[in-house]
Image 1 (tube, helix red, strand yellow):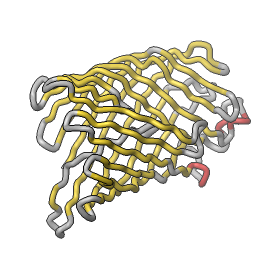
Image 2: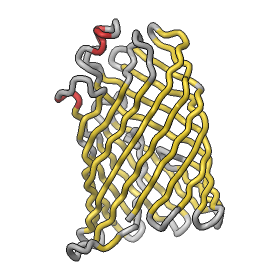
Image 3: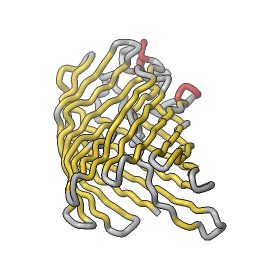
Image 4: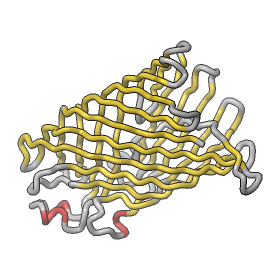
Length: 291
C-alpha cells in the first residue's frame, strides 16, 4: 500500500470532470510507481552482513462518483509488490504483496473541514499459499482543516488489527510559504517543494513504505525457523532523497527521484525476530493522473 501503508495523511483532491453517460460528476485517480533499492547491509538471525536489494511496484486506480455537493464515493483497487534479493537460508520473505479493493468516501463537513474514510480489503502476504489468513482490511480515517488558501492542516489515523500497533494517529500540514516554496509535511512523503515554473517542481524530503503481511504456512520450516510458519511480519522502510515533478499535461504528472534508504525492518513481533537493513541508494519513478 503506497502505497501501502502505515500512516496515510489524506489530501482531498478537487478535480471533478463530467461523465458523459449520465449527469453524475466523476473524477478518476491513477497512481503508478516503481523503485529500486541497491544492496543494503542486512543483519538478523543467521545473517551477519549480507547484501539485500529490492524492487517494488505500486498501481492504484480510484473512480470517484460525486453523489451530491458534499459527498464523493471512492471505489477502486490497489496492487503493490516488494521483491527482495534475500539469501536462500535467511528467514526473510523474498516477496511481499498487496492486492486489494479500495472502498471509501470524501465528505465536506463544513466550508473549512473535509474528511475521508477509506478501507482496503484484500490479500496481504507473500502469495505463496494463499488462504483466508492472507486477508486483511486496514482502515484510514483522515480530516483536513482549510485554515486559509495557503495553509491546510491534516489529521488522521490508521487502524490495522494485525499489526504490532493497531491504531496509529498522524498529523501534518501543507503550507505555501511563497509563490515558489511550499512546505508539504504529510506522510508518507513529507517534503519541501520549489516551483521552478508552472510545470516543473523540485523537491527534497523523506518517504515511508510500510505494511503488515502473512507469510506462508511452511515458510518457517523451509527456512529453519518452524515457529515462523504462517507468521505475521511488519515491514517498514525509510527513505531520504530529492527529485523533480513535471506536469506534462493538466491531467498527467511524472516524477523521478533518488537518494538513500537508511533503514529497513522486517519484524516478526509475535516471535521477537527481526531483520534490519541499512544504508543503500535508491531510485524511483512515478506517474500520477487526475481526470
